[in-house]
Length: 254
Ligand SMILES: [Zn+2]
Image 1: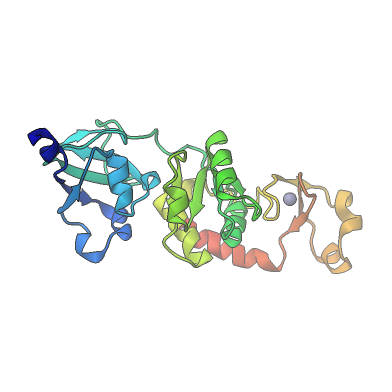
Image 2: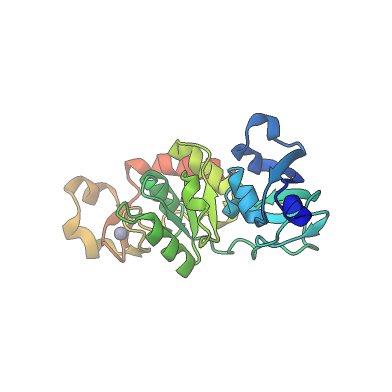
């Protein structure tokens, strides 16, 4: 009887979230150690997600100074520190919860991020976007092809079958691209004009003669260097959007 009474009592942990994980918390819980109560025997993943932080954002959890896995069950009185995925300070002696982000970063965006997907492709990043994919299909593709899911839907990122994801803080595609490049440390991987903005196919330089019949007369007259998508066959040249694209790339790389 006494045992039953004790097991039904709430347990308490003291927990602190670091860096951008605080974006998910109410202001009074940001960057401070706070008390959290729970009943039963939940995993640490369940506890942090109940506070609004998707597990895909988390790289390291320390309990009383020791790294633990997501399925660890915290005990009464534990001190918990939770660190984000792309934090750059050195924690190499400690086992991370996942392998480091893939050296070649590949993405899949949710159905609302078509503009961001186009910019990522323009910068050379392999990015799947299809507004007919539902959440389940997005997760299946992401896991099979080791892609990072980009989304503003926290619910999607909390899905237990998903291992890589990033929650976009901004709603503006131009700010989103800066976020992705900075938070995931992708500046060195930018490879512009290698991927088709329309279909994500790779583009190759082609001879003018091979596409000349497909060009408008003004384009034919003023440009000599052409690129073509292997997938949808769209033709690219350094036309009016080119300067604006270059400006954006220089800003992101700088
Ligand atoms: Zn294409």
